[in-house]
Image 1 (tube, rainbow, N blue to C red):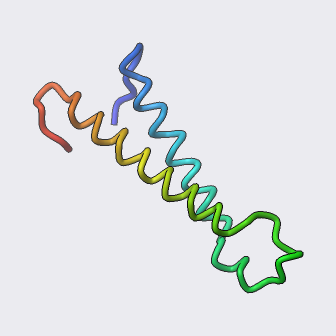
Image 2 (image 1 turned 45 degrees about the horizontal axis):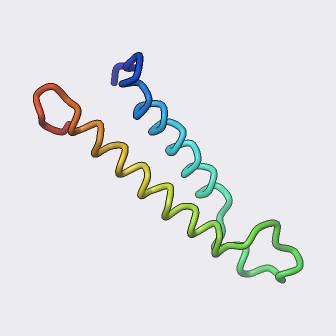
Image 3 (image 1 turned 90 degrees about the vertical axis):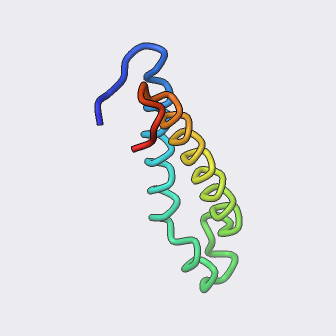
Amino acid sequence: MSVPSGEHGFPYELEIEAEAEVALVEASHPEEVLAKPITDWLFDPVDAERAEIGLRGLLGAVQALEDDSRPDGHGA
């Protein structure tokens, strides 16, 4: 994948950021937190799930935008 420049680089940069954030949420293993007492939680697992869902939606939207902006009009 080539790195676009200028104003067309924004969706690419946003995609990279969203992918990094999804990786962080996945690495937090919110499902494992539920097995611990609530007083030991560093974060609310439900909030982590919401964040992951939102980030995956954002990532999908950015990828769709990139597909629509391809010169041939076709996705990857």
